[in-house]
Image (cartoon, rainbow, N blue to C red):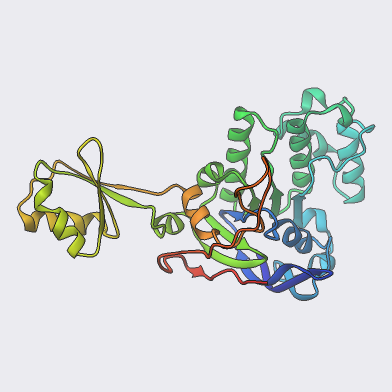
Length: 330
């Protein structure tokens, strides 16, 4: 388990992490999400002792990283894909880490096989593509066979086959009872990989919940209703508090009411129902809604490629997540 308690980290006048608290439990893949500049990497670096917090603490199975007797056997981390000497061969890079961590050298070839680099283990890592560098970084994280694993953007540079491989690997590690904490900007991939997410913005917690609850809580989740007598239900749906829209194909999109309630309204109106289905928001849509007021920069008018500060406030329809808080203003 990873425990973060009231963590605060400043860089001069910049508050990178602001009184942040959450837990990452074992046996599941937990996604760590947030806009650019939200404080994700700073939080991960603090957890593994690469940054000292100004306030609060981060613990791994009840102990701060610096207090772990054998860190590589207890925590594996990929925070920077190319964290190796470019002139060193892949196998030698892992051997050096194994010696430093008092890990049997035989483990090196094991992890090279796991990540699919056995055939290129004798090549110098400086010639690796980004995808191969990611695999080498994952191998280093797995070297000590640790129960706790942290990955920062682990699928960057991987091809589609590699992304599926990484997804399956992380899920299999969690299924073994390990703690797996993954930061990523790829919402579609996180929706397939993680079952729980921690969302932060401007260094503060926004949500700590299952992916299912995050998606269900989005106002972009709707109900699709098809009836040959739409005039019987439109006014009644609006009277029940729903927002309705007629689609080009004749169906009705309903927001603000769940599918059973929409069906009840149609039944009460005597309207035949030919289709009634819930259209779930994607994790990406839910994430954008959650973090709307918590981005450092947002797209706006100006020179091509320019960025302007976002001023919109986040709008979230209700606390369907187990922990939901609004991002603070600094």
